[in-house]
Length: 134
Image (cartoon, rainbow, N blue to C red; front, side, top):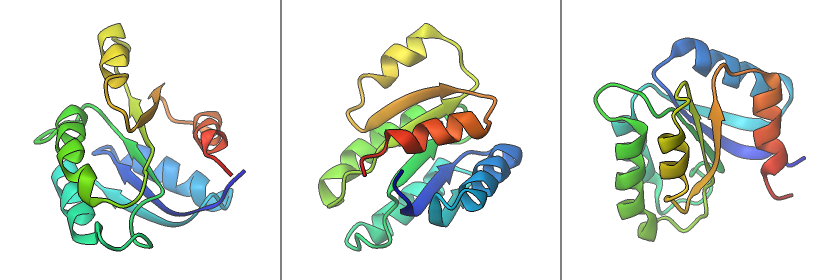
């Protein structure tokens, strides 16, 4: 399994943030973890680091249901920003939504690599990391 340099978590739930960060650190899955409680701040970070491949995330874990800017809006804005990012960043949606429409909608985004339903646990996190190319 590949160890990544930068993990990006975009989720307004502090417990989810904590669980992902804790497992990533305990299992030595990511050297650095960047946590954003809102998608706007994450987009600004991506815009500001778009020319620095070493600072860009290797993986983004994104919640769909967030206030201010939800995960779908983030994905729409990310699509616009994508031409200036010189790195393929897989995005894994982690959500409490069990709606089939959300699963189908996720397939419309080329950068979405997976759709996972909360609760977050070790198996879910390990499954995501096992999907990453070595």
